[in-house]
Length: 111
Ligand code: 5GP
Ligand code: ZN
Image (cartoon, rainbow, N blue to C red; front, side, top):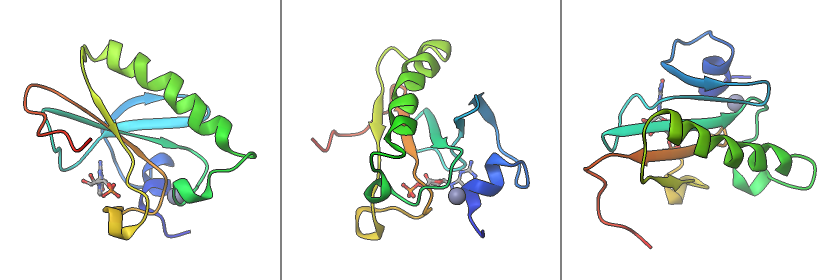
């Protein structure tokens, strides 16, 4: 499958790894939108949040257990988690991912 994040997960494309376990992979965003900008992805290819269902939602739950660990390990006192679902919402890579943004330069909140 021609998926950028699948290639990053399997090492075909290099990345700056932050965390990895059997279910998920986390790495620094190549174009950070804040001082610290980490992407957390399930290792299983799920194109977007619309494809999360009762069969794979445990992977999302797992990611939300891992995010606080990543935050603690990286010294994030405050942070923001974002998922863009669908092109009109800004999703450019069609492999489910959660942005974890932190640092002193977090912009205006959207919500
Ligand atoms: P989206 O716009 O789909 O919500 O987020 C995709 C994110 O992937 C963007 O923030 C973008 O900077 C990041 N990205 C795109 N290509 C690469 C890459 O090759 N390596 C890394 N580390 N991040 C990437
Ligand atoms: Zn993928």
